[in-house]
Length: 121
Image (cartoon, rainbow, N blue to C red; front, side, top):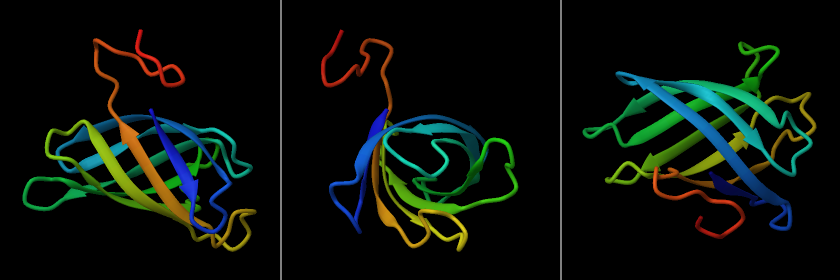
């Protein structure tokens, strides 16, 4: 679970939920982005890099066309591997969100807690 904020329009923001899987240095998964007009349901694939595999980069695509990427994400995984800070950029000219850039912060949901709004259950 996490949040995203557009740097072009800071009032444009929302929540993000990601299911990230990795095999070696390859990462892939699905994500759902709240409060967006540009492909709220997405798939992604990319790579981990760096001495400790703590850098992540991937391309996003619509679920119905996973080879047609519309945005790139690059970020850093903290050393405890439970959070990712990243930036995104929409790079597909015919996308309604073309040119938008922003930030995301994703936090791993631990088995002992669940993020529902801001409260712990």
